[in-house]
Every structure is written in structure tokens, then in C-alpha cells.
View (tube, rainbow, N blue to C red):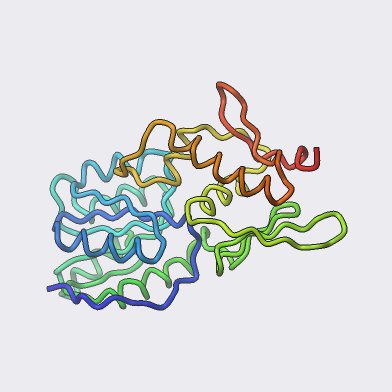
Length: 250
């Protein structure tokens, strides 16, 4: 049985940390997803190995960690590991399994898993192992992200803007606004499409209206405008959006 204890220590993590969870046990999968969501991870939960491979091959969605059950319908978790590594994909992988023999652990690690967690397990241990994988991952970043005169603080979910005379203004953001601005700040002065934003910031199975991205951008723009940076996010009709740092002061 799964230990139901929830770990309450805040994770040192980014809001766009996106997990692929491949687990065909409904109760266990739901419990893991719920816990990860509580710790501000985005989680795409898949119950079939073939579907999981399709998600992993979709280059428009970038995952930070994959959590793979060993035994799955379709392609097994072990085979998913092998396929990823054969293609040179360095995605950190945590393998979940009821197989507790040393030979099985060795087989999982040799297939390309970075860590191995035997069922039943506690959520405390799961989260600790994910933090360890994040620290070793090239996606892991420190507590702040700075682009031009904007600094995202992951510790308190705010953005700080520094004006021309060095004064700092802190702008409080909702979780989704934070994720959205972070995505733009990781692609400064680049055109990003509505589909790219939706793929990276909303979970795949999340129900959302067709204009959810535009609506969220309007909310973010309102806060930025109220903080004296009204032209930061530019709309390029028929193309997408751009964090246009050059236009901020216009």
C-alpha cells in the first residue's frame, strides 16, 4: 500500500517544473499527481506505455523529470528508458516498481533509469528523490531568474522590476501568471505561439477554453501595466506573442 503521508516542506523548484508520470494504478497515480500538484509541479499523468512514448517524442513539451512504472500496458517502463537513452535523451528518470530484487534494480539502472523506488513508498521519499534528480539535472536553476531589468523570485512568487534610477518594484503574481512570465523570460525577444505556451504551461489533460492563453496574458499585462511596464508583452497577430524588452520604455 502507498503511505499517505504528505511532505509539507516547500521545494526549491521552478513553477514550470513539468513531470511526466506514467503509472497504470489509478489510486497510486492519482495520489502522486495530487501530491506533486500541491508542490507546484505540472504533471501529465499517462496510464499506458505507448501513449507515454508519444508524449516523450513530442518536442513541443519539455519535461524536467519522468516517473515511470516498470510494468505498464503497451511499452514497459524499462523499454521506455532504453528507447530514451538510445536516442541520447538525458531526461532524468525515476523508476517505480514492486520488483525489489537486486537483479531488478540493476536491470532498471542499466536500462537508463537515474533512480529506483520500490513500492510501497512514502511521499516523503518520492519528493526527496525528485529533489535530488532536479539538483543533478541541467534544467535545475537557482532561486532567481534575471532578464534585463526583471528578476523572478521563485521563493515568493513575485517579479521585481528595477527602473532607470535603480529603484525596485515588486509585482505579486498568481501561480499561472508567474509561469507565463517565466516562459517569456526564458525566450526574450522571441516569438512564441499560443500552442507553445499552452503545451508548456497547462497540463495536457487539463480542460481549458480556446482563449485561455489570451485571457491569462491579459491578466498578466494588467499587472505589468499597473507597474509602469505596459508594452512588455507584444501581440503579433497571426503569429503569437513576444517579450519585447526593447519596447518596455516606449
